[in-house]
Image (cartoon, rainbow, N blue to C red; front, side, top):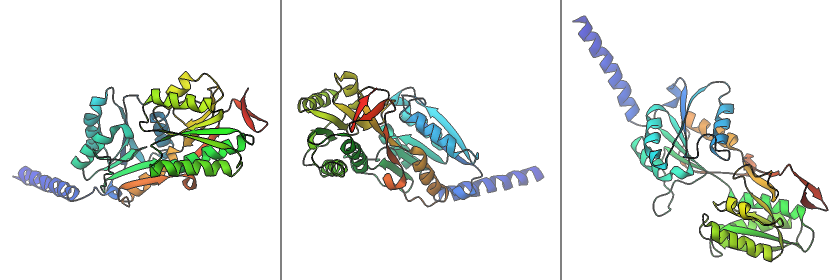
Length: 318
């Protein structure tokens, strides 16, 4: 009889806890050790441009061992949903990359009491409209400021009356593309208003063949340095480059600073970004939505290739 009463009491306590957690977000302040899960895409945890940087950032942020971090990788794209769901069942906060847009929408709807963070992308529906949920935060880096830093580096490097180029994702009537172009131009003109700027637009950022043709056109137009805006085409151009010149500035896609043609890269500081977003989630201050990080946050910076020297105001290979 005593055992039966004790069992009923334990079940009542468990039911109360379960009920309280289902009525809204989990109270992260009452979690003894915050559980953070990170799922790498099919490129693996050691992929140098994204997954490895996220892992290193989380390790640094967890130097005091305040978090319990679970790392997981997907062998195949079709495993994303299953792996995200598994992490959601065992973690309070789940971190994912932009390749898992569709899956994060499904799983964040199934687990409204958990926090989800999409890195390097905006969670969007089938019509490319941003999706807003209290438990879903999208993190992106300011494209305009990245273009400004690239332009500034080019303005410092080129002599008067030399040409610079940019390949921008979008089209000439796209407001976002125009903002990027204007920021690029502003960075250049801070140092040199005599540089002629050549513009090319690409609608599909993953169309390597079109991108390579555009780059060759800029080379034919005597551009000494070309800024490649974010896109899947970047490595294809670098692999097929006949020069330099043209030299290249681009977002850090892989370990590019040892490439002869790459003058420098736009670096993203994931540690700073994750520290801010995780702190908001931990304090239950996160309202979801899109968070944009830039120069003022020290989230982006320009890194000159270590194997380049400056001579006559122009970057030249050793």
